[in-house]
Length: 95
Image (cartoon, rainbow, N blue to C red; front, side, top):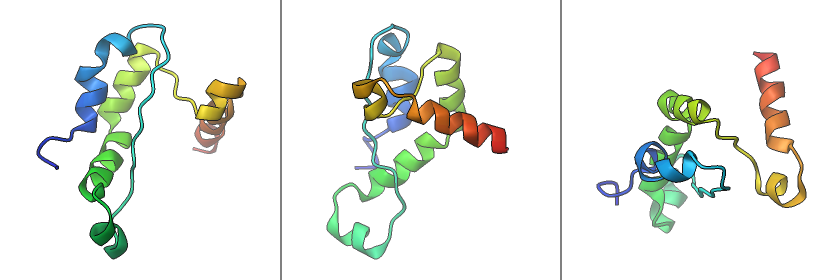
């Protein structure tokens, strides 16, 4: 599984045309750290660790920022809210 799954590549290479467009794209990741239950009971155990790395990777963040990609929640998209962007603003203000 780990040999073929690369969520960084999904953001940095595979979806470059979509990311550069004005279309809405959807990326579903399952970040998380392994505990015994996850390790023994899911098939996404390695992918979860890879996704944590992708979502915390400064290169991925910079790439998305450079392209002007706005990260939103499904509620933001469906209901026109700005919950995630407001969260980011608050988080930035605290730092």
